[in-house]
Image (tube, rainbow over all chains, first blue to last red):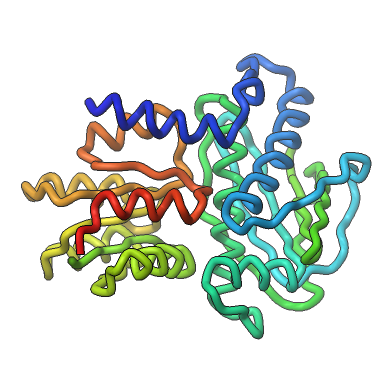
Length: 182
Length: 119
């Protein structure tokens, strides 16, 4: 067993997530779990964009509420199963995702092409993966991301689900995460 | 120096390839999942494998197990969102050489690559 590699990976991750962010009770009440998931998603979204793209996102906690969001051009969808049952929809303003793509690829896209949709899927995957790590709860599984694109598209959840919207802003445009839970 | 990059995200492959190019590597084989990666690996020898974990058809872990099962000791670096200690240990037990968690800064990726890329 390469214990040095385990220690190195854990140390790198610890630099990205504060240790007090990881404290969580396995027998937490569902409401606590939901609140915790919201906070983990806010933190993971900011971390993914700052780490991967150097873009600072601002979350307005006063805007965390049940509502339907503004119109976006592209959305990534990914599900949690097991200990957490939820779906998140990551919707990104065109200018923000173009700026992120420019950082990654060195070329600014001119339209929402396969690179852009791929990037949104990958960002959704990273946001969910980082949130899962922050939850620090065994038995959380992630699905593979899917992406929908098109001006004015809508992603709707079954009406029995609770939808919590987490809006973010940046110098390059806005982003929203819709958290759908039972 | 030939590098095999397996990731179901085309844009992630481009990000990795950009970093490989910056390290002086231009001979790169791409695969969209573990199954494609394993086929490519069997067809032509490579010096390093970079693979995602969660991919359709065949996961990066199963791809790694196929490589080690064939007797190859080629360096395999897992680049993944799977960050739990148990997952890292599982990959090490399957024979992974190095491990990088997403999200990562581009410098982190280059640091990892430079350890293995001797042009």
